[in-house]
Length: 183
Image: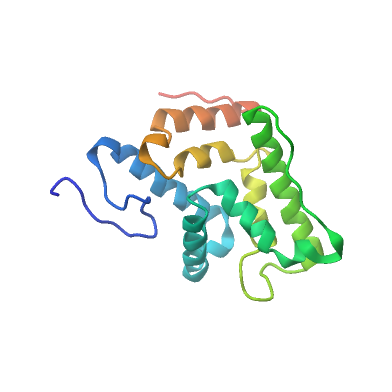
């Protein structure tokens, strides 16, 4: 089709081709992957970014599912009887913030217990992405997970529009006392 074009599959959303109806959401998905790659230092290496891409695909393009699978596979979190947990049912917003905080806490625990960035098998661990998690966690004044979640949804119609992404970022910044003004 003349109005669709291929791109680098590592940064392409699941639909792989640009649909004129959702071109902005296509670009936001790609930008979301770039943000993930920048924030999670191991992903700077192509091998680990490819590993992330495969895992993210298996998690059905759900950041929370990807993280929860990473937690379950992180052998350092299974040592000495440490067991991870996720908060109970609350409002979507409260639940999201608690998850963000829990992810950062588990990454810290992985570093303390595991003692290294990568697993003994050379795979990603919670410790290996701890720096990025702390930047994403809202309570620490970072970029909000909700923004990335909205950018990286599987179906284009479910992804945030650019104004929604800006509103989410503004909300995160305002919660930290940073006032945003737009031209």
